[in-house]
Length: 306
Length: 316
Image: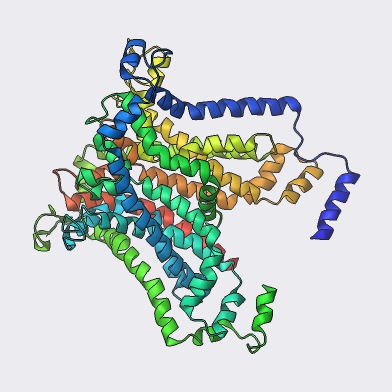
C-alpha cells in the first residue's frame, strides 16, 4: 500500500502531465452556471409553494399568482393547521410510523444476524424471500391482502373496527412486513463484514446466540441502524397507498394519506393547499436538513451491494 | 480484530471448520436462532407471499368478496380474456406505464448520471449542489402529486401564470388527457433524477482513483477515461438503477391518485388493480387477474436480478 502510493506520486513528479482533474477555467465556469441554473429550477416548485402559501387568497385572486405585492403572512398556515386539525393527523402518523419503524428494525436485524453469522443451508433462500418481497409492487398483493384484512378479527380493545382492516395495527403490520426485506438485506451485508472470529470467540466463551446478537453484533451495527431508521422513517411516514386502501376511516389516516381527503373539504384554493403541503413536508424536510448523511448512506448501502 | 483472536486463543483448540462450530450450538441456541429467523419470515410470508400467491389463484375466479369462500366461482381464464378484449382502461394503462418506463429510462437515469459525474469532479460548492438536487427525494410521491397541481393548475398554477395562459388561451394541463401524463412525468422526473444521482455518486466514489490516474497518464482524455475505465466499474450501479427504474414505473400510483384518482389520461396498471377493491365495485377475481399481470411483469425483472446478484455474492 505504502509503496504503491509513493510510486504514484513519484510517477506524477516525473511526468508533469496533469491528471484528469484539470479542466480549463471557462469550462469550469460554464459547469457552475449550468449547476446553479439547474438548482434554481429544482428549487422553484418548493419556493413557489412557499410564496403562494404566504399570500392571502384574495391578493392572488386580484393580482394573479405570479405577482408581487399585497400582504404576506402565515394566515394560510394557521388556517390549515386549525381548520383541518392537522395535529390530529400528525399524531396518527406517529402512532403508525414509530412502532412500525422499531419492529421492522428489530425483526430485520434478527433475520440478518442468523443469515450473516451462521452457515445454514436455508440462508440464501431466506434472503431471496425477503429481498424479492420488498421489490414487489404493493398493488400486486393488495387484492387478497385487503380481503384477508377484512376476515382477520381483532378484539375490540385492539381495534375499534374489530378486524385487521381499518385498524392501526393492520397498517403497522403491513409496513413491517413490506419493509423488513430491505432492512434485512442491508443489515446482513453489513453483519457479514464483522469478523467471524468475534462471534466464534464469544460462542466458545459460552455466550448464547442471543447474547451474541444483542451485546456483540447489534452495538457494532449502530451506524447502519441509524441510517436505516432515517430511511424507514421517511418511507413509512411517506406511505400513501397502504393507508389509503387499508384505512377506510378518514379520521384515522396518517397525515400523508389524510391530506387527500382534506383536499376539497378544507383546502379549497391553492394557497391553502400549498400551506398544508408544506406543513406535511416538515418532518421529511427535518430529515433532509439534519439527517441527510444517514438517509443517503441508507439508500446507497442498499444499492452498493445489490 | 487481532486483539479478539488473541484473547480467544488460550481457550480454543486450533481452528476447525465452520460446520464443526455449528454443531457446537446448544439446543437452546438452535431454538432461539430458529425463532429469530422464523418470526419475521412468518410475517413476511403471511402478509406478502400468501397474498401474492392468492392473487394468482383468485385470478381464475369470479368473486364479489362478499360471503364466504363457497361463493367463489372458478371461471378459468375468463378474467384475462376480458381484460385483453373488453376492458377499456387496460390499453391506456399499459401505454402510460410504458411511457413512465421510457421517460424514466431516457431522462432521469442519464441526467442523474451526468449530474453525478459533474459533481464528482472536485469542484467548489459540490455539496450544496448535491443537497439541492437531492431535496425532492425525501418528499412523498403523494406530496409531489399536490405539487404537480400547484405548478400545472390551469388558472392558479405557476406555468400558465408565467406564460400568460392563465386568463385566456388557458392550457388545461390537468384536465386534458393528452397533456396531464406529461405534467405528471415532469414532476416524477424531478424526484427520480436526484435519486439516481445519489446512487451514481456513491458508485463513482468507489471507483479506484488510481485507475483514472493511470488512464490519464496513458493519455486518455476525459471522455475516453469515462468510457473505458469509469463506466465498466459502474456496472453494479447501472443494474441497480435499471431495476429501480423498472420497479418505480410499475409502482407509480400516488401522484396520479392524488390528482384525479388515476382517470382521464392518468390510468395506470396499479390504479386499475386498486379500483377493483375500493369503492362500490368489489371484483376480487378480476382485480387479482390485473394484479397477476403486474406481478408477472415485476418478477420477470426481479428474479434474474436477484439471481445474478446472489451468484456474484457467492463468487465474491
